[in-house]
Length: 150
Image (cartoon, rainbow, N blue to C red; front, side):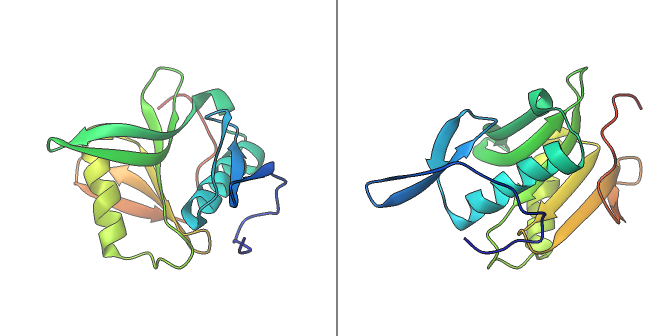
């Protein structure tokens, strides 16, 4: 797979029926390795190894309802009190990050209410802190350290 803008991590792979799968530590199963999944798995490792986010608070690929439609978020990180700390949208490396990507994560966050957002295609990463009062987000240089209080 393509080299991404993350430190180099070791992953478990397996081959079956001419498809390569990668082991997802959060879902505890092998999943088909697509370019987007490659980015997702690197983000999960980045959160755990570089940012020291607890694996038990990370959730991957769950369904949510937005305006009556079923959507699937990529990654969220919860706080111990169950509130959402961080919502992450992953794209394949060849997909440029555009205003549409930010609109998508903003729509998801109207339901999820995360304090921080991250958008990445593995090459370019954008981090935002929500300003709910003024209905906007402020860009950050990097993700905050994981903390459990406001």
